[in-house]
Amino acid sequence: MIQSQKEDKVMALVSGRGNPGYARTLWEQQDDFLKAMKPLVKAPEEMPGDLLAWVNGSTFQGVPRGADQVRQFHPTLVIFDEAAHLDEFAEAYAAADPVAAQIIAISSAAPSWFGERVEEAFESSTDVVSELPGCDFVRHRSGIAVFRIKYSADPKKDEEWVAKMRPTYSSDQAWRQEQEVDFTASAGQLVFPEFKKEYTVVKPRAIPPDVTWYMGIDPHPRTPHAFLWMFVDRWGNHVYAREYWPSKAYGRRGNIPEDDELYQIDAYVDAINFLEGPAPNVFSPNGFTDNAGPEQKISRRIMDPAGKAWAVNRQMGKDSEETFWDAYRKLGIYCEPARKDFQAGRDKVGTRLRPRKYVGPASTTHQSQILIFETCRELIFELEHNRYPLLTPSQATKRDPVETPLQKRSHLTDLLRYLELEDPYWMDPQRAAREELFQGYAPYSDVPGYIVNG
Image (cartoon, rainbow, N blue to C red; front, top):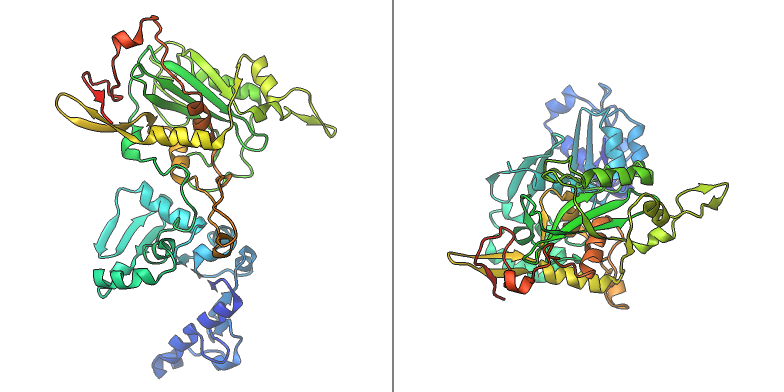
């Protein structure tokens, strides 16, 4: 069975109407003895344009897009053509997976579930095989083999060809999507283009005992609540050390599932108290830091003020008077309302993500003021993927670029913006004059003698 975008494309790939389809052409070009060994039930021009059928009971069936198309058959082999452009491809793949012996999905690049699986495979694997120029191979964690073939696989497409052809494309995004197999090229500009892992993401380290902790809460009625912790050290580094977002989509590509479990606020508070307490003693994703014994004291908590508008429950068509905000306060989590100036928060984050140069006695290093433990997978994912919507060519002639990002998977970056808008600072627990004790800045490694330069 082969599935493509439109019925006309299906016809062109199978038997065809008028002009022979691709599969029919392959059959007709066989030697006569092969046709005699495996004869068709009748002449191909007498069959429907989306079907080739053999006397032995085998069929080559074409279907247009749609998940339910696959459920009508029990195919041995399923081929998805232009999978990144198929509506409901994820559902169609799920329908084929339990019944098909083999599934092959082929596509040019475009933002899609197919593209997410390809990108995820190459991002998560350190064993990428590149035996041929322009062709990479890797296995997805599910075991699926993934091949990525670029224009450079063709030896005729050298630098001279690129210099000639690239200007003929309507935009740089079009070139990157079509020729460089960039699935996000047409997905819109990144909200945080300043984010670079090499300057911002660090391995978890022992947390100094004299840091100042800040924490943010982003509650939602239909998705799990999100939590983010950061501390400021004596050198002015903003270190994001812990996050908690109990979603099935945590830290990986994909949509937030409709069936994510929605916890009661008392359960969230229990999790907060546990994660800030003396028990956790390992660094691991989604909440855990090595607290080294003592309970962490949070200097300030902030919450999205929308928490004041959402009722804790609804009975007989009426919202309860108690809101998320009230429920957290009732259980001992006292917050201040976050400021929701998107552009100001984005600019604060962008400025503090830019690398600063540190000059030491023996070397020079670069590091951003915002630092993120590598165990904060969701925050890192969102920084890499939050985008503005891309205008169509028609829209671009009538309006300026959209100034608000896509409202998709941004709970942790929202909290990042809220916290940075507070201009968090280090408070000396000994009340000593910081200016006297700690001149300048130092990178997070606390190497003595470093000063900020630029």
